[in-house]
Length: 98
Image (cartoon, rainbow, N blue to C red):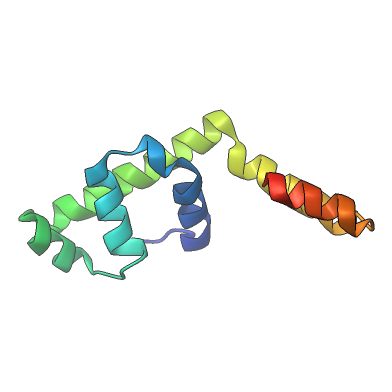
């Protein structure tokens, strides 16, 4: 899979509660536990092709959520603005909101 792993895992952390338990399991096996598609397929008694297709479906779902809600994009913009704030007290209060 040719994807931006960091972006996709950030999206997962934001939107994971919108996924089914099965979708979470597949995602976490691949991205957090570093299982291969073959290993995921064996665990779930499906083909490697199905595992790949299902993971792509989950990734596309996360991207769709971000395109609609733009939470990650907003958080990134706020983080960039935080870098410019000199007042540490204010900066800490804003960081708590993220």
